[in-house]
Image (tube, rainbow, N blue to C red; front, side, top):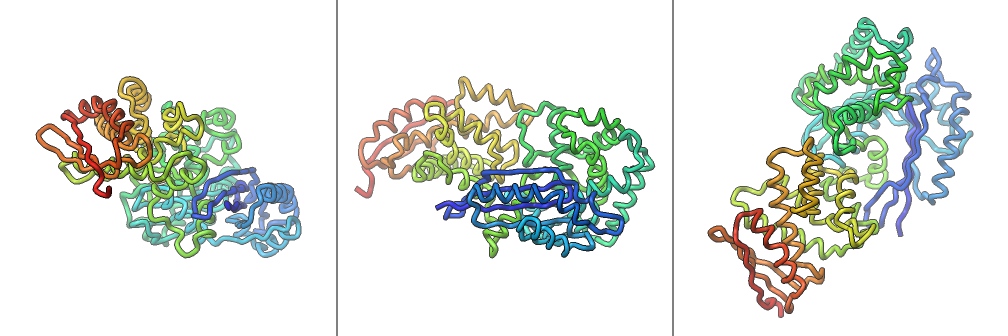
Length: 511
């Protein structure tokens, strides 16, 4: 029986609740998310104390979140507070007040714990071995260095987009920051980094951004470019992209900034200090590019709760595919396992050079998810599968790989494939059209060899000759549906690979 798990994040800028549904085998998905802006870091007095009135102001929201958890029959709950409460001088008193006002048991995360949770959110959903994670919250900024998917260093600074806006942006007139105000804040951030040599001694790494600042910049960037895949997870921006924002956004009047496409009105003021923090640290660390992670603190808290001994997943892509297939997708696991096996056997027989790791990831994704759209409508499942693959936020795939996997899963060379290739020219590379035709036709051949999904063909043995591929099929009995499908897809396969295709059918050796 599936269970529900709640993760509540009481942050400096906003308060969020995420509810996960989890199967007995460990697959999971998000079934509810609630968010409300709170700006708790603005409620800390000059002496660093947060008064009970501030807690009373958020208590109705916390009680409603707990009602949502009861409605979803949440069986395990983890509520965590970050910088605003952590840095208050009366943090223990705040925890007691929240318990009295709401009945909620709250844990206060240290900066190290917050950084580690963000690290888990990244490495469990992205195929990146080395990088620097930056999580700019409302009241703190965490920086984490990782190599070979292992965390090496984490530091938490007690400044974020909200409290830095209060500290350096109070005198800003009409929302327009002066060069002097920007320089004062830059200088403060740079001086805060000085005792952490590892930030300066690991140049040339990508910056993976968590939190609202970088996610908002990504949305603005996508709007400006009319980007063809409006998904922020694993979206990449260049240093030049962020430099452009740095040169423009701080100098816009507040009312004009609020109208920027992709920028929510409740973030129009704090986007500037968040951007200054981001750019200053990126330059100090000599980063090479910006990547956005849609997963972060709450995801990390979830993994810590349910996988205490081993919270880092072995393979983000395989984990993501498992999660998708575990929730109501009407497809036989044995069938997609055979399709994937056949596709890999064909690929290895056809490629003389060492296997390209990206091609193997694409075949795995397309072979296992090509029929997910049947959950919506069987007769148009391929088109629905394309949408699913494109927008599911599959862990472990870049945007380019995501688009390619969708094209390969729905290979239709005379109609849909050319149209999708044109739609996503801003993401794909020139060589990708040939890759789509080769891998797409190969996958259709693999699917065809189990067209009945019955496993009637028990094994395949591809061999290559001069401009030819021959496949010896071992079958339990006459595979009528499979033979018909092979005939139907043979022409596209032969054209894509520029070879002659043939096959023979022998009785299975086990019969």
